[in-house]
Image 1 (cartoon, rainbow, N blue to C red):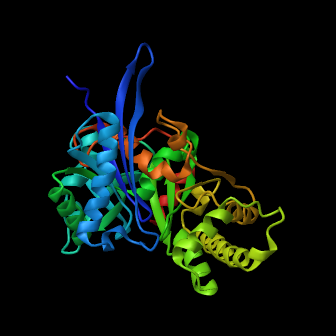
Image 2: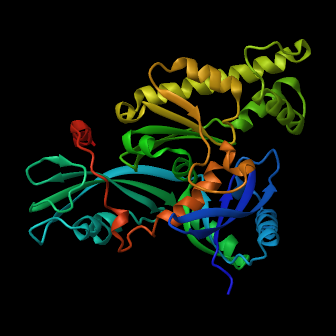
Length: 395
């Protein structure tokens, strides 16, 4: 009997990536997740939003990626977890519950999923994609990290909810349905990247994951192993190439070649004077992106909890020019380019920061159940003894 596989599809503006993995049991070492198959279909350079492509073209790209992964693994892919990169919004709300027993249980926390507050998240336009419990307050107004087992009559939980457009999600489901592929769950791409790239200490003590995609950049704020918020910037790698194309009056395909060339350029080294104007165009956009991101972090209400660790991932994270400019803006933050940490497989993919969102989908499937399920690991948090939780009083 064939061993069950984990199948994911990362729907991005630059390419469609299909990954196949298996959980392998090691003697005395538990399980590890092994990447066994990869399928990639590159989208046109002009594509900024994959769902803006006509349905026939998008289905062809998905089929091409799936077929390549199937051929590599000799499997049939009919159920997948997919990524969402657009049409998301964030909100924080508080759910209050009267505890039935003498001590707080996981059921008291999970009662949120059967509450009116949660059902009201399903609107005409949106529905919840992720729900994260980010702080707990018991009836004496004390903020605690893990309330399970504590005595209290009332528990107030602050939740961070990421919602997605219903029409957007419906279109994705319809496309996969026409390909006879069942969508098991959708996961935000920036959340997947953070799952793949963050070290345990960074996820625990606070971090910012900057995911530079083709058409935009996401900043995800993580603290105490929960996604507590996110921001987005409408600048990505496409805008670098488009600037070059517009100013130099060359094709977008040719300008993309120049963009990739300067991605690997060391800002401190000499460059070809014939391409000086192109370099200046690239540099100007890199400086703008660095300034916008830095300004967002400075203004973020999550800054104090997360700015100590800043990790760069995504399609645009290989830009040495951007990395140098942005790192010079940071004073006390630990800054690095991220790669997948919790998956085994070829280094071509595991060590590539551009693949963190794809690999993060696999990690999500292995470590998470459907939100709102009956498993305690969805809600239970590791205890951190810290008065920093008073921060969440203001949310």
